Amino acid sequence: MLLAVLLMSMRFVSDGYKVGDTVADFKLKNVDGKAVSLADRKDVKGYIIAFTCNTCPVAKAYESRIIALNEQFAPKGYPVVAIQSNDEQRSPGDSYGAMQQRARGKSYGFPYLHDETQAVAKAFGATNTPHMFVLKKEGDAYKVAYIGAIDNNQRDAAAADKKYVEQAVTELLAGKPVTMPTARAIGCGIKWRDA
Image (cartoon, rainbow, N blue to C red; front, side, top):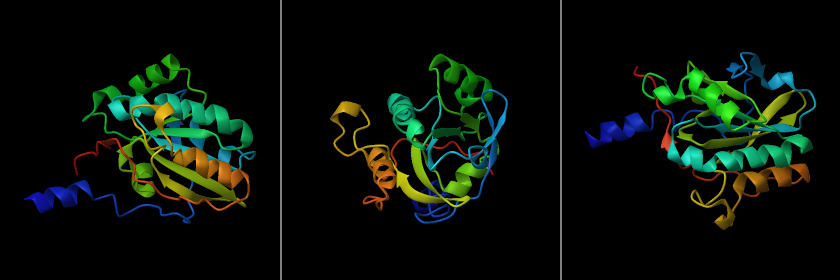
């Protein structure tokens, strides 16, 4: 029984993109009702993708850090794109309407996309909220440069001494390889639809 539970909880962990993989573009509905894809922005050097939600306490604790990452790196060519993939039947507080309210209330300066079918989360291999992916643009393609946590302190941003996403983007902007391309994502598990 325990093995079955572990296998079920890991069903999407082994799938999904790895560092170095090319990401397939997607088109998801933003909280403003417009469809957004990676190809929409021609001026970017890459993206910081944040799988997050409205309801997870860990995601809420990291929300200000996601906003700060966008403020720091969007002007340098690495904007944030937040994606909410929880099934709203299992997590009503993550409905599209609730997403719109949260984005307005927190004055998000980045898209907050609804992954209603969960296809994008599955493609990425996202398992948690938050789960971060840094994508580097190469030609017209986007390659995964970092996967994992934002930093190493979920309670206190000021106490974090390893800022994984910030370090990855800073290294990419300097033309250097990412020295720590993965870190274990922490947070609530994505609420998958019942199969």
